[in-house]
Image 1: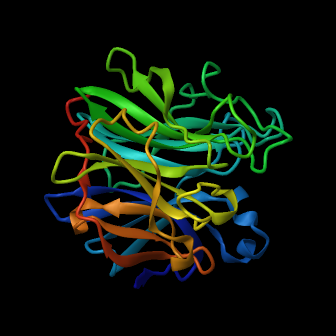
Image 2 (image 1 turned 90 degrees about the horizontal axis):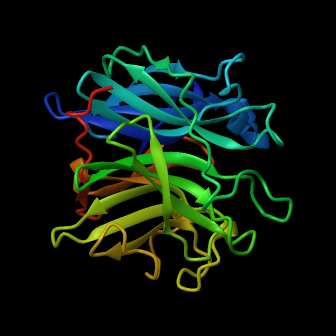
Length: 316
């Protein structure tokens, strides 16, 4: 495995935009002071950093803070995992944050920032955009009987039949606390990237406390693959033997996952987590080192391709 190790910061979850003209990955990553990792405090001081790479082996670290919390806005705690897409007039970055004054301080919402250029490092938050959990299908705040905090994070966008959809790590309002982790699904209202409506969970097997950092991809036979991560302590799926790590389910439809059995693509014991499948690298699995930080290539290639993520005709 090859590691992209930041010499200054502890680095974990990442997402990226691939610029085909220059064959360059523009990578955004969560990072915090290394000293905070020992007590798991890094989660509460994380900022979004920016770097570039052509192969996820050689890495140019550009800025450790292109987006961070703002004291006088609703996103006044640390910034958590997001997604970035190109639109007609720039780039949008959806991200996760919390308001320290709401509930127990752990209620997660989705925010949004805009940049004219992917490489400028100038991201302008849109404070009026605050995507809260929809009460029809998803929990609104932490449950004291649960084994993990509230979940409404890790947005991932794709197009289906020309309509924007968004996946989010969530918890179903139904089911047993501790096993009600699900992947929420939202649909754009009138093709707006600012207005969303709630659909039922894309996948809710009743086996996980949390299902993190999801993606939808496709194989050569036009099957859809939903992938997500779960640590062993929150993985109760009978088919995975509490392995944790990167899991997947397969369907002929992007909305046909509900009754599918999950399988493990890469177990947590591989020392990778919050993995992304990188279609530009033959679908190689890339994640971060949970102990040391840094982004690693696994050498495991899935040959999966992107679902439709071309938002270039949408105007912000």
